[in-house]
Image (cartoon, rainbow, N blue to C red; front, side, top):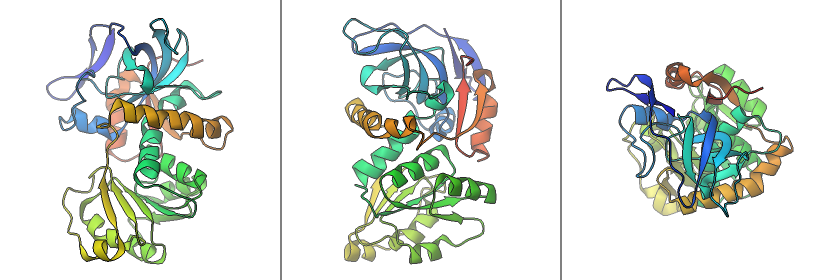
Length: 321
């Protein structure tokens, strides 16, 4: 089979690799499409290797169909599925633990299904398991127009929360307002600190970090949870500690990729139970910015690097009817 690997200079190269061999507890999936994530950019730069046991090429989520499964498996040949991976979706075939596979929501096209697993699992992990979101909470979401930001806004609204989203352009501000964000802050024009003074968040989902974290974390409401999932704005920040003691604030570091398959499987089962019906009813939908053929992986990565996208960028292997 073929996979999209990178050479010593980081350039993409379509390369022939051995096809995975079916083994106990796993299912072989023919990939139709895969979603891009910023973790792909880090992995390409040599900063975020895949966990042990996964292919060394990129790709954290996919949609496709079951090519082969063992007797007794709940997945059968031809089933339309999407899956969360530790790596390896930039390929024609992937071997996936059964607990990391979900059915494609009824009526959803395969490219859209490819953009579901990583962002909705990350949003659910952090809103529900880490932060314990409840109706009436206020949630701050950095990079609100990203695939993860859009998923988090939609989930937070389903759970009855008020949302504050930060964006980097007027076009992105308009997009997240349409999705349902209650307050939108253009970070290039507006002062987020002032907005948070008037709307103290109970939960913050932060992929930026850097100096802004220290500046704004004390704006949390009493008992607030600031969840750091990436450090796109820098790895260092100066934080005043007294508010943590006086008001019970928490700073939580969280990544999905490092979690056990057992934890990931739990999250995915909850998505199918609680979120898939919202998608099938049309009340929630992944937002795609652009779908490109796998051969244009370089262009797809450049879109993420330039922060051009509003929603997910998808790489397609199988042309949909």
